[in-house]
Image 1: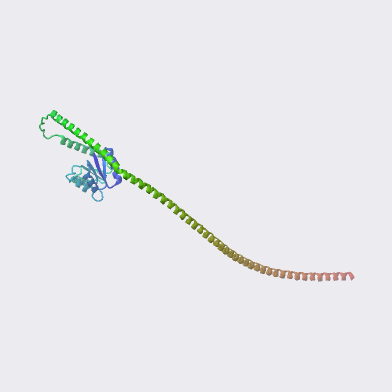
Image 2: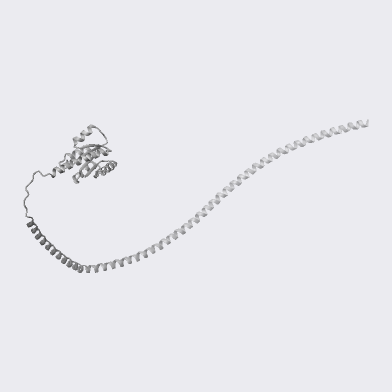
Length: 312
């Protein structure tokens, strides 16, 4: 039994198709109501499992188109939907569907639907096989018929044998004539092959010579470019060295000037400190001289007093 599974969802087609195949059905698929009608018109379909909600032609419209057509109304249609409700079942019944399955369908409900369809199909086949009226069987002389058949077969066999012989003779003559006619062609093809091979060898030789010339020219260009690069490199090196020397000289001069300024500042500070120290030393010398003079006066007075008392 071949089933047509109609659903715009690839995942739903895969899941439902596996269930149908597990029940022994051969499964064809369609992604829309329009595609389903095209397949039904060109293929022998035994049952249709129709998705209710699809873009374009929906499941109800596609079911109605199948059941209202004289050529396809015998095909049972099962509506598959993700929604439940009495209204939907009523719409499916009005469209001609034999039942409604909720997605994903339960295996027992699917088996029930398939069993119902198989029973109805078997009943229809039995009804078609039963004769409506027995017709009288005519009496036939089988021996006479067999003799006539044997005579016809012998004549046919002889005719076939003659045809085969004639065909073999014609084929042999045709083969011989073809060989004779093809000999000049073979010679011409051989000459053409030799000429083509010669031209190819000549072309290869010329291409090889041209390639050698091109390679030599390319080598010279590369050498010239390398020389230019070396010259530019030398110029760049000299330029960079001169720039570096100039920058170094400037930095050295700036550093020397800075050192000279620092030395000058340090020398000025040292001279100022020396003058201060000299002033302090002069003050100390004056103070020490004053104190020495006072001590000398005191000592002289003491000596004079001692001499006075001693002489008295």
